[in-house]
Length: 532
Image (cartoon, rainbow, N blue to C red; front, side, top):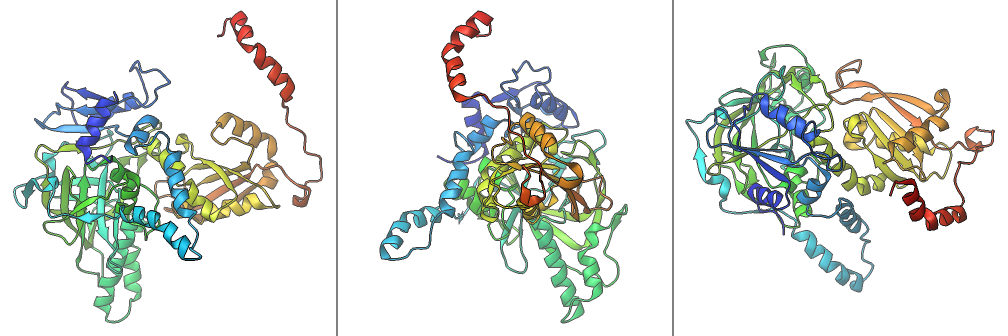
């Protein structure tokens, strides 16, 4: 059965021995980060290497916030990611996705009848709106402050406190479709935050659509050059709080933020789903039960009924403000930049809400386990576009967008380069700085094997290609913000049809007869060698 809410999930973690409750007083300014970082890296915790990630932590004595509770590191291990999605292995989710994708168009009446059970199952994933929910237990339109919550400052040079695990809900002003994304929020004051919409994120596209619509109204029937400049204004980098200059777009855009949702919904907010697929639907698919939604008090938006905390407000279309620096998952501080400003006008929450958060920094950390889950679950979707794909690996040290290892079923010359370009055309994968392509018999999950095979197989001048294009906003090394170079390495065996005339040597492998013979003696041998 799906977890009803964050509290149901916390109870499950406790039953599974995956949660530690901390009653020692801790400070949300830096101290919780230092504790969690040590736990997630097993530094001095006594946790054996076979259990990487450490436990989830529930802090119950937070300095300056009597009675408050902070949950962190809830997704910080392979086992907890499986628990969160209620599977024994993440490949089970991938198999379910593959089953839906393998459905063929019905050819006759009997085929249509056979599809009815699957159609009925799909129908139960769609979110449903209810009259009210736990998130409405306390409603504050006045006399509230964001500082009432134990929001963390994670790292010493952070610009302040940041909400780091929010489900940010917005609506496309053109199509009306909802989006739930995870964008950090820097706390400016009691009722105002930054809205860190990186340019490629769907929330940022909703903002640009609102800018275009407002500029079109200002201009009459057309969108002039000044509107295009306004749409691109998020790329500007200057300090201070500013308004968009000139005949600027006016108005505001509704935004709601849910904090402390059930694990499937929280995870759904980070998945690189196509824009037309709503995250509430993805969460329903993952939890095998629809997400219950309630209408906001002051907005025409729907939020998870069982969320711990909901912030309601607006992003003004004529206002940008400096956001950052922020200690990011690259292991470096992301630089300050101009972003929209979120004005909170109403807060609803459960009685005694539990504040759910995360930290990012040098890997391995909690976000690495979430990224690996995305890797496994969405491999079937990548195969829709790249059918020769066998497996992929995004090493946590590559922080998702710096390195992708890919194995393929090679059928024709130049195929590895085709695969590189196909990956660079796929959504968030377009930011991958380095792609290494190997043959299908190379286990890309084994970094040692990949290193051996790649360095043996490549002629650098022949097999490395460079291209220019969009790069991740967090890439501090690119020549320009959001634009730089990417590298692909073809480490597959080279064929004569690829201009390789020399013989390719055989790999050293023991014959099966000898291996079987040694297998039969191995128990006795290991006992004699003292390694049993």
